[in-house]
Length: 111
Image (cartoon, rainbow, N blue to C red; front, side, top):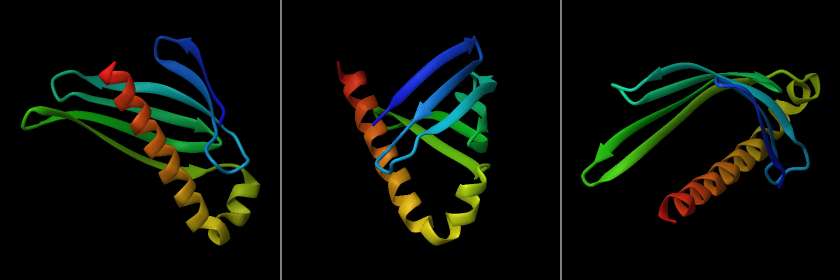
């Protein structure tokens, strides 16, 4: 699995991310909103995917909860051409990648 993050400025970074399938997504994330009162971070996504990602912190009894959501579309013609045929596989790949990210974040926070 390949992961690269390169900061461009205080609000923007380039990412190369790869899960199980043999392709790497190249993305640029740009922070567009930080609301400390509501504990909300919003970023625009450009590159192989276009859309947005949102992170919200909240409380659940004695724990902190991170809620992540995103809405994206693919921009690469080959992805658009095969997307409807391989959509279940892409969803499983995304789920696996997000679970590994969750586990990595949990390890980081507990150290």
